[in-house]
Length: 568
Image (cartoon, rainbow, N blue to C red; front, side, top):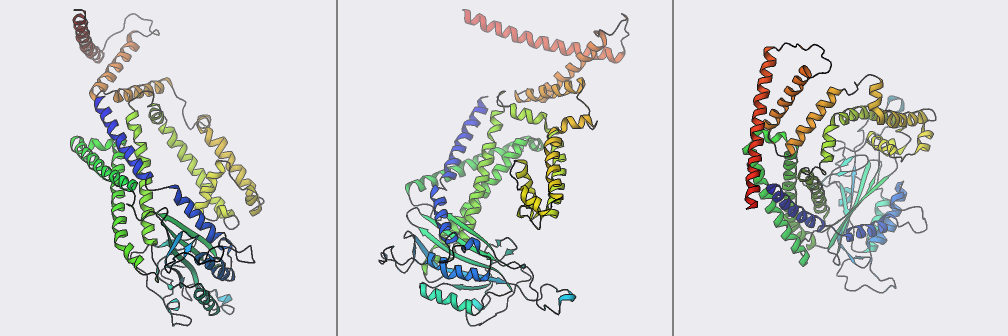
């Protein structure tokens, strides 16, 4: 118990330190900064056409109207609301008067080659061009259009730059790139020139608009990416990313306190790693038989990964930040740094999740708090059986919904969407009208049968299996066996070793067998012959009983001596 309390106290200190460290990385200003910027660039409508904003872009015409309207107005803030000039701009834009535009924004396009798909022979007389969806193999690398500037010439991708996962493809870096000017009028002329010379063509598959801001008031960078995908079906799909990250980690006194917590975290990591290594050397293969030990190893791996990500992010920030801020006339690619910081935050979030789960290991020694683990251990077989039946029916319905409604209903447009939609249906969130409109016959049949099987069959599957004779009812022998397993598990939690538990189980078996043989009420004849095996079992039972009586006698003598000593 003393060792357990020491481990609990040490782990609680580690957990508190980890919580301080993780919550010190985020603050509410991140949400508010993202909300303000998304409202400016996503919800602002084109002047005179209230229906057109970035979210509602559906055609190339709408896209150019956004570029020449809300985007241009949102990027260039060169005067106050009363038309007076801003204070000391230092050749930079101040969005909402507080956020410095770092460098200049960049616009990037990726295209595919012609004849990357095949036109059916029946339509070759009507159409001789075919542009497939975007893949790195289909990407067009040749110059096009006017060919005298960077926006018309292909730029090779940077090796360590992350790819972008969009709605219709995974896009790499590089492409046909141009940067905006510091002047609002020059940028507008640039947009008009590109529009008049057809910079966007049938082969265009995606356009990225990237720029970064810094707010000194809250010490946050906001990295923004607006994405317009041009699928092979036509039209435009828009998406966006707003990452508010703290790249300058150590500025205030609180930041240095967080740094001390990071050092403490590393010390704890070394101590815990040493403890686990010693346990593995002591118990060898038996160490890996405990699920709690696997959780320990997983937590250590996550901690080491988090430390690696933190070191990598800090090193890259210190190396690149000065270079990115050196020239205000070039694009500052903070997306790479923000991308890795988001990964680091995700790793830390998963780490602290499993760190809280580990507390169950310590509270399981308490009888009251161990009810959850004992309940799960008792019904694990039933849970596995239910999960197998549930997911067989669940995935069958998910595939049915995807194939029947996938082309009509957004919730079933992909197999993954179908799976999550059915989870929402189980929770009571569903769009029955859309399903019925997609198929007036199969829609209601799908919905009613899915609800019936999930709620009325699967959720009462235990009784259903017994009725169908697929599962035998629990007998008295099964109850005794389950009770025996529960007692053995309880003995293990209370500190008894395996030899003591096995000895107690053997004595119990001997006792039950002898009682059934010689003390059963069903036996009418007084004479019962004793076999050699039964005599041996009786003798061993007597020997074990003698040992137990001797052990109890020693305990009583020890207690009596202590009582006598207290009296004197």
